[in-house]
Amino acid sequence: MLIAWIDFDMMKWKLLFFIFLSWISHLQASEPDHKDLILRKVLTAYRIEPVTITPTYMGAKEKLGQMLFFDPIMGGPNNTTCATCHVRSKGSVDGLPMAVGIGSSGVGEQRLESPDAFVIPRNVLPFFNRGESSFTALFWDGRVQIGENGSFESPLGNKLPKGFENLLAVAASFPQVEPDEMLGRSVRRGGEKQATYHADLVDKTVDPDNFKERTLNVYSNLVKRLLGTPSASTPMQSEYRKLFQAAYPVTSEFDITHIGNALAAYISLAFQLKPAAWDNYVKGDLSALSQQQKEGAMIFFGKGRCVVCHSGNEFSDFKYHGIAVPQLDVGKHGGYLDYGRAKATGLAIDRFQFRTPPLRNVTRTGPWGHNGLFTTLEEAINHHFNPIPLMFAAQKGRPREAEIAGRLLSYRSPILAEIYPMAPSDVRAVIAFLEALQSDPILSSDEALPKSVPSGMNQFIVE
Image (cartoon, rainbow, N blue to C red; front, top):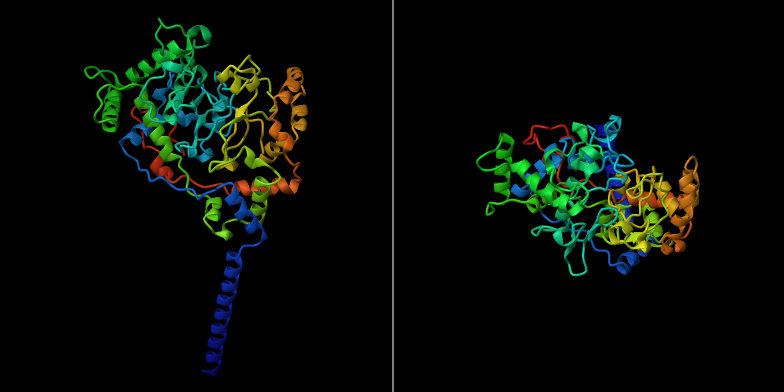
């Protein structure tokens, strides 16, 4: 009995000692250290507030948007849709340097296997938090943006249909009219095969080279394809008509704005993010960040000057900057050039400028850059303060790259001249801080993915 009592007493003291150590550890973790004191000043100086989550749910409009998001009926050749390039398990992108559009199948790397595939010379941008009002410009070149008077500006100019509820809804209506992305091509421009033909989305009487006329024609025909008429419709069209009527119960005539608004409602819900470790730290949880992440935050907001462009809760100023990214002999303009913002504004001063990418979940959305040049975040960060190594490497076997190198450097943002060169340890610390911006969507995959779509073409319902 005596031995048992001694053993019990020893266990009790060990337990008390363990509790005491845990208490001391908690006190130490909750006490701000030197880095915390500096970061408190940073939060005050940059007026950084805790992120607030807007309550949302899967209503009738979101349900319609969900079906449209995953249904290949939205693409001219019936082989592309939003979910083709925006895959949940790949960080809401496709994991490729540049997107693959019409003429292919599958998702991600599978899309590179088709010889008929058309490559879109831009890296896919993620969808995280795109429903937030802070997103005042969308796409790499900002061709869809909020104007100075609060109006929606787009490539359609004053031809943009009235009725879009937000900027994301406007942007969601443009991939369907891009020939290589979702629409498909005319026969004389590469659409001689079913997998690349725009089919019934463009009337034969419409000039395929007249962007505005063709776009409005596609909008009209897409609604007809989805809904038919009340007196003549397929089972698929009847199902879509029910979905549209549930989403818009007081509307009898539907147009592209109803499609865009539904897509925006779903994207806003499905890709809204939970608070990240950084948000918890901002709220006062000093243990939310590791010491290396705190060091990275100090560099990000301090000598690295990252915050000059990557500002706000989404870590973007939504402005346009040039960082002399090599062109890689591909581009949207002239076969091997991508003029970026200049194509949207028509101003030479905007050449090779691209919108500052937001950084939430940036660690999950590689490769990076407008053409997917950067295979690691380390490469991307290093290029900001020293573009020469990658520019030199890109010139090997590409004589045109050497010819344009001087022009790229001349359009490099002057802000970058003030960046403090980072040591490898600094870069690692910044990447650690970026990992503190990771978080999962609020909606689970089971909730975000439909069981099937009205057309029955379910190949893009993948996590």
